[in-house]
Image 1 (cartoon, helix red, strand yellow):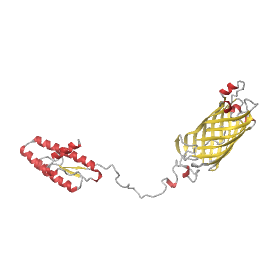
Image 2 (cartoon, helix red, strand yellow):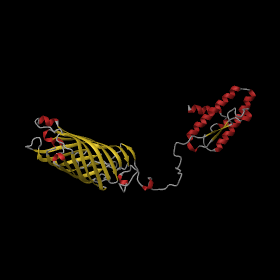
Image 3 (cartoon, one colour):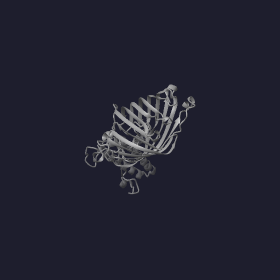
Image 4 (cartoon, helix red, strand yellow):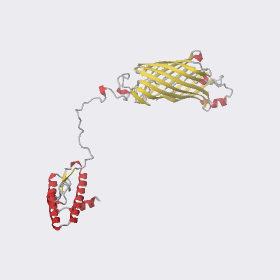
Length: 415
């Protein structure tokens, strides 16, 4: 079609104008214009002499086709093309009245180039340096950007923020996270007291998430008001009995968090219930099941002595108890872990947690963990491998009135 339009345009133009390029400077355009005007004047006089109306219509049609061809050629030549002046027959010689006919000259502007048009022009001189106001970091920058992790940052509403103001205790046996620990327990088996409990496999399947925050959006140690959800299943498998499910505890909670500077405060509700495993009941049908249940309100505080050292404590009061549970409980501890991204090499960590419970005459357990930790670049995600030692009451509340003296290896992931 392009070729046909071009050939039709060339056939309709006078001999002196054939082969004129669409681009190439003002001189060819003026020459083309003079030739076309002359041809138009001759053609107009010829039509007036012979009185051929249809020929005039055909001449106009041919000129329109030529105009289309010029436009198409201009689109192909890019931004370097100059403005073309496309002549039409003079109104004085053709008899056309101004305002009632096509103007004598039509300006055809070239299409803009799709390629780069040149350097970017700024409204003001460029000044190097940080793009964030006051030389600081953007609110969602990685932790490595900040010299002071506790400096005040702008607060705003956030739905489903990617990190947490209050994090789970590293060595807390009942904290929601992904975790698994293989250990050897030297205490008597609570189901078969005449034998040692031996090797067991405990796993935690759950996590803690933030659903709403009014506060800062830093990747490490954000501040503000926050609503969280927590939940986990704590399961125990017995490798010596075909990995039977011995017991499982389930926990769900809604913590309300406030953090400012190095302080964090928690007010939470949680429900916890304990269950004996089906396989354990089938193997030991005479073992008495304990229906341990707690619905509790918890108030806690934590404080960071340094960027990497945290101390904490909390008190819980249960308003509904069953299976030997009593209202009051206390938990406290400290943890040392790198707050900033560790990279592939990681860094060491250490954590210790203690619990005291009213139903145990204020006894409880102590858990110690140490090993190697890796923290992600954003969001404070933490993965750990290490050693765990626990002494005291069994953290599986189906056996809460039995003790453990265990040591093993584990891995833990907080997100």
